[in-house]
Amino acid sequence: FREILRQDESLAPQTWLRIGGPAQYLAEPRNAAELESLLKACATEELPVHVLGSGSNVLVRDEGVSGVVVKLTAPDFARISIEGTTARAGCGVLLSHLVVETVGAGLAGMETLVGIPGTLGGAIRGNAGGRSGEIGQFIRSITVLSSTGQKFVRTADELSFAYRSSGISDLIILEAELELTKDDPEEIARRMRKLWIMKKSTQPLSFQSAGCIFKNPRGLSAGALIEQAGLKGTRVGQCEVSDRHGNFIVTYEGATSADVLRLIDLIRTKVAEKHGIDLELEIQVW
Ligand code: EPU
Image 1 (spheres, protein in one colour):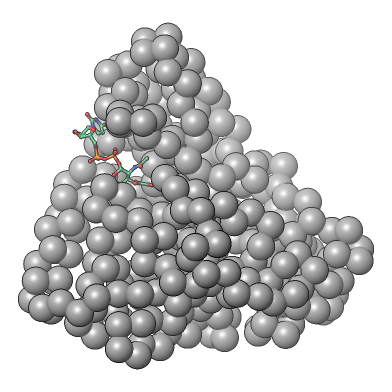
Image 2: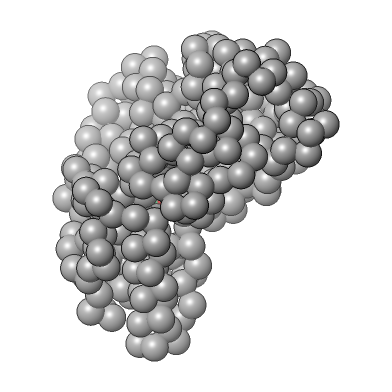
């Protein structure tokens, strides 16, 4: 299995923030069999395994990640098939691709996730979504691998989707079956356009970012709380709180993860002082 391990490769190009140190090992298995044997070997050698999707919701520390970072974006993990109102898709499928394919087939549901980056696997793990919907509500079942490489299926009633969480932590998602609904394609496209325009006008989508940094406290908007604390435009090194949306940190050439972490601390301190609220991270810090 060592043949597919790349040692000390920087993870910065693998993340949307374009920052962070190296992975002790990086592996891109070509298929499920290769992944299974990799997992078994990692279990034997007691090497921790971290699954990376498209890196759109992850901040990798400057010192890097120990163990094996696994990317599941090979063609074998990126298949989509549609039958009736059921879509079956691999963990490496980009959410944007799944939106296009299902909407193109006249199926409603995925259009509510328009503009969300990331892979299906990552989206399920973090129950990605927004005010218009969450991926969890469309999942009928997922096929997963345990950390020792055993394959099994988890149906929706065995999963516990909640705001930005799925209850899946030590399982590797291989593929999912989604239950969608038939609708008028014109209507679906209209809803999708409306959501996309709203997103583009409120979020800094052309900048390097990891999307929203903090979860919304119940009934409140983290972005609004950050704006009210006067933090928009606040800069640490080469990263800053977006002028457009307070819950986005954007990074510029030369930024480091330490800068982002310092800015996160500053935001949490100021929001706690102003509002008495402790903001919880929405992104994963590796
Ligand atoms: N607002 C401000 N200032 C800001 C940002 C927002 O006053 O800087 C206000 C807005 O005017 C609005 C309210 O706060 O009245 C809510 O803002 P918005 O509609 O932008 O939604 P959000 O709660 O900030 C959530 C998700 C986003 C998702 C949008 C749209 C979280 C943490 N964020 O943002 O998800 O795109 O709804 O559906 O749940 C992400 O997860 O990475 C993400 C960007």
